Amino acid sequence: MTDLPKTPLDPALRDRLLADPGAILADRDLMRALVAAREDQAGANVIDIRGRAMEALETRLDRLETTHESVIAAAYDNQSGMAVVHRAVLGLLESADLDEFLGALQTDIAPLLRIETLRLIVEADPALPPLPRDVATVPQGTIDLVIAAGRRAPRGNDIVLREAMALTRPLHGRSLGSEALLPLDLGTGHPQALLLMGSADPTRFMPAHGTDLLRFFAQVFRLVLLARLRA
Image 1 (cartoon, rainbow, N blue to C red):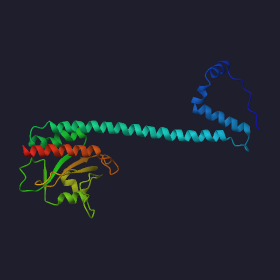
Image 2 (image 1 turned 60 degrees about the vertical axis):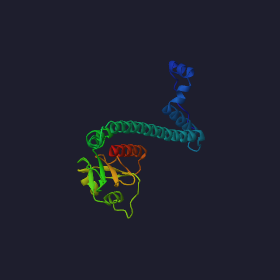
Image 3 (image 1 turned 180 degrees about the vertical axis):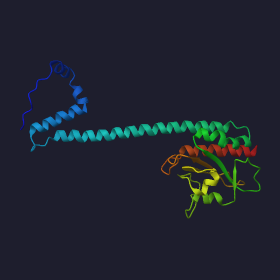
Image 4 (image 1 turned 90 degrees about the horizontal axis):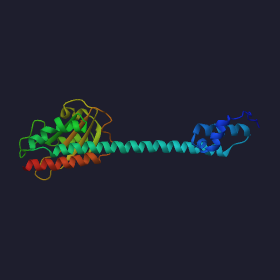
């Protein structure tokens, strides 16, 4: 064994440690130094299980702190996203008629959602009333092709989050980083429709992201649109 140097503690420091020994336990660096000193004193052939256990506990604590921070960040992002969608929904409800409702998508609602493009895509139908120029009218079957995006079969009514594709660039009217496709079921007697969102941020709409808020927004949009079409 190696003897530790007999350096006396400063009396004031010794009194502080005796008065509050928990301060040592709360300081990781100090505890690590004490364990290392104990192992040096024990010698190379002796393993201090307590020191190894403390290292393992520190590792677990670091992982827990990282997880805790991630959960807090996710909760904050979710709350922030909810507030953004709620403001956009209020913007939809404030419209007075069909023209104002659809005309506000790009000018008013898209900035509220912090995206670059927001367009309603509707397949051509003779029974459809004239729509504002901001609405993109496409041939029948186009929406299924856009949603499928090269897949052998369409994804049905699922919301699609993905990297912006060349296929949808003409609908956006510009190059973007990512996009969200929100299919709209307008019911019998109405054409197939799609709400298309686009963001310059390539990480804004990713397949791994949740779609609950977007689904809520699409449902509100669908109900308001149907109400305006009946008016």
